Length: 149
Image (cartoon, rainbow, N blue to C red):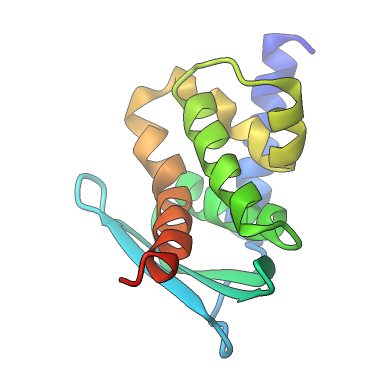
């Protein structure tokens, strides 16, 4: 796929998820939750998860921010559902590498699903924190309980 086509797809997906976010709201039976704030731009995201038998059963987010942070959180909630906690940790690492411009393995790109398109954020360094905010919240949410915090 050419760069122009990839950029158009990126814009379409970001706008679609920003205008019609998936899984936005509150999760009454959340077992894991984390809120993070990006003071440089004002974005705030809360990620809530219901984890059962080491697998994400449900995921949702709430908060406010720019189109990229909202779209990234929306996509995150879709791609993590049904995956193990270890898979989710791996997704966070792969996503973080991708958005800073590092190449990732094709299997990791497949694991990320639609989130992989956000790798285009690497072209806009000031937006990387926007794209990774929800992913960092996910990582802290799944790490906090297991470490007894």
